[in-house]
Length: 271
Picture 1 (cartoon, rainbow, N blue to C red):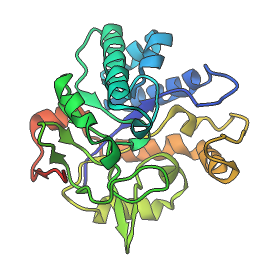
Picture 2 (cartoon, rainbow, N blue to C red):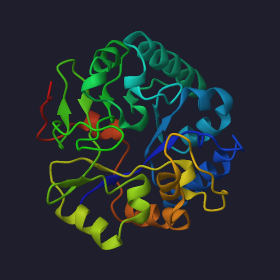
Picture 3 (spheres, rainbow, N blue to C red):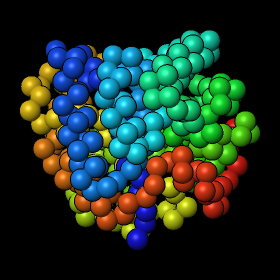
C-alpha cells in the first residue's frame, strides 16, 4: 500500500468576514491528527505565525513538521524577484522565531512555482531550504507547470522538489489528494489514484482550514467568481473523514523526514 503524508496549508480564509474563523477549523484538524497519532507537515503563513503563534506552536508540539507557505500568500508570478525574496525571508524569520526551530520546507501559495517564477528556487537555496512542494505538474486554470516531471526531482540549485501528486486520466492530470479535488471526487477515483498512480511519486494530502469548515456562510470570492467559490464550499462536511481514512491507512512521516531519508529515483529538473 502506498504511503501518504498528511500536509496542511495553515492560512486564513481570504475575504472571510471573520478573519479568526480558521482557528477553530485548524484545531479540529489538529485534534484529528492527534487522535490518530499522525505526524505530517504544516505549511505556515508568516502572517499566521505573527498573529496566532500559539496555534503554530500547538502543531509543532504535536510532532508536525513546520514549514513555510510564504509570508503573505501572494502568488509568486505577481511579485518581483526582490519581493519574492523579501516575502520568503520575512516569513521564514517569523516562523522560525515562533517555533524556535529551523524551517527547511517551502510551499508556494497556490502552487505558483512556474516558469514565470523559476528564480525562486535560487532564493530558496540561498536561504537554507532543502526541499520545495510548490509545483503542480499539469495544466491548471490558475498555476501549473505541465513540463515538470510528476516524480520528485532535484533542481540544479540542490533543492528537492516534491510535485503535487496527480492521477493521469487520458490527457487530464488530476491532483486527486487535496483541496477541492479531495472533497468532491468519488472515493473510487481517489482509491484508484493511490492504487494505480505513478509509483515514482511521493504521495501527500493537502488541505486548508476552510476545507473542513462546513458551517461557514457562503460568500463569492472576488478573484474566483461565483461558480469556483461554490466549489470551495462543496462537501466540506465530509473532508475530515476523508483525510482520516487516507492518513490512518497509509500513514507516512513528515516531508522533511522523507527527503532526509532519501527518495529513490530522483530525476533531473525541467530547467
